[in-house]
Length: 102
Image (tube, rainbow, N blue to C red; front, side, top):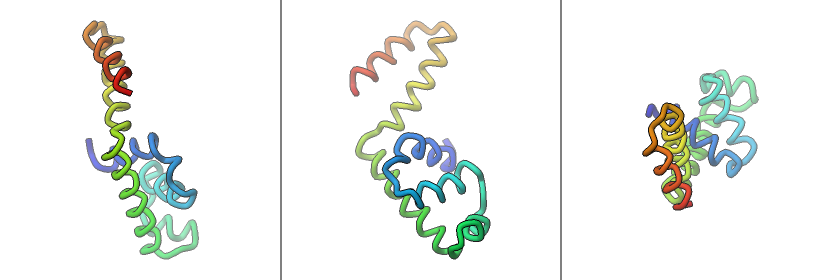
């Protein structure tokens, strides 16, 4: 999975842990595809300030995923749900296994 999509997925899972400013800037950067310069202009801070806040947020999200693996499980569950809907009976069993691990 490309890094931008992965960070976006991490935001979906762990975004509430970030402070409001980090979450807002990451949303602009990863979900709305704004450049650092555009974000800086919109929020009234320097481009470097935007970059620093986003990088710290990325580190927080990656650290949480490394510890918890919830995003990995979430993405696997989404994939397995799709397969189960397509008639893959083994996918449903794998879904239950992942849920049992939680």
